[in-house]
Image (cartoon, rainbow, N blue to C red; front, side):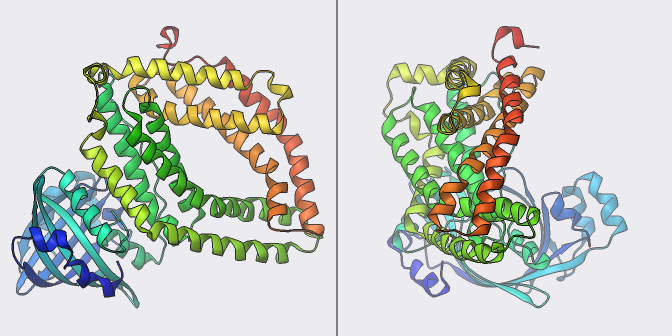
Amino acid sequence: MDADRLADFGKAPVIATNARNKGSRKHLKAVYYDTPKRALQRNGLSFRVRQSGARFTQTVKAVGNDPLRRGEWEASVPSIAPDLALALPFIPEKLRADLARHPLEVVFTTDIHRHSRIVDLPSGAVEVAFDRGSLKAGDRSLPVSEIELELKTGHPSALYELALRLAEHGPARLSARSKSARGFDLAADTPPAPGRPHKLRLDPSSSLDKAFAVMLRACLHHLLQSLPAAEHGGDPEGIHQLRVALRRLRSVLDLMRSVVPVSKLEQLRSEAKSLGQDLAAARDLDVFQQETLRTVAQGCPSIAGFDALNAAIEQRRLASYDKVRLALAGRRTAVFLIGLGGWIEARGWRSDVTPETLGQLAEPATNFARRILSAQHARVLKRGRRFKSLSAEQLHRLRLSVKKLRYVADFLLPLYGPRKSAKRFSRGLAELQQELGIYNDMATTTSLLADIGASGSAAAAIAGWQAHAMIGSAPRLKSAWSDFVKAKTPWSVEAAA
């Protein structure tokens, strides 16, 4: 939150009513170390020595695929200088030789004033740390103004309950990004890296209930890891990945409709759709400027007007990013993400269900997967009938069905293990989606140019280029569709090998 609002959050009713006492105040200084080539960071580790008064504590932290859970190992040391020998047991053996060859260096420092309190809720005890200070790397610095929540005892839902109450108290942005991640980016002078979905791992024997939990948690993690890059705006992939994360979430919620009560699903799905719409203009302009406009301008150097068109696009793009940041910083987004996380941790889809539904949730997820995949695959085939004669609008509807099948397959195919047929099917489906996406981007260029009021020789060149490119892309699109139609479905018995 904004630095001038941090103290006010300490007076929030949920803190004032449930905190054990007035807490403790500390001045924490820390130095983060790594090799010159950042071997520890590249392997998901951070290594620091923190000073609190006369005490020095050395910490190794490990971050896996879950941004909300971190391994942490501490040891007392005599000074701010690190003692690598104490850390080696917690560092993978493959890295130890690298550390022996390349001495550690200071990457960045932190200077934080922390006020910590323990808040007791019915579901658990949470340490609430009010942090104010800065990160420094060379001559660059970054302010810190945040509340860090850490579960001490009880159920993780306590974190979300407390976070939701704080979000309702005042403007705050949800973040799962650690100080170390921000510090390394500050030292490298790079924007936050776009988050990407990790490969889903599902045991074929998983119940449907467990499979839903794994899929939803993966969506939440993708959302949280995509937020910083989308808000920063330095890399167009940030907005793109956040939109993908929201679509993946909606896909899982759609999957659940046939099994669990729809009221909460519809609420979450509506919020995900609304946030996705807030991102749409920025993404469309990114694609047009970075891909379409740049390609045509390079291909038609003798035509004037591209610089002026690019300037007009850039003005609109920057304005669209301002709207994105406003939406991401809003209370509605914070409440949506916190509510989603709490619902997942509590497995809220089990609430108010019939014994019959509980029985369905306990069944093997493969039964559900076979039925859903077969139905969505059939829907795609139906949309693609008489493929060669489909109009641009019909191809757009087909693209949406293919995209939905792609997301469903990404979530459910892991239940079928490492089958070759699953890999082939996923690869063919991805190629078809890509070709349909390229064709759709070409087809929507005319409407985008009209929307921004573009005219003149540069706009005409772009429209003509895209029309010609659509003709050229047709053979690749037909080939991708033909390969998809012929591909064996991994969930069928004959494709089991």
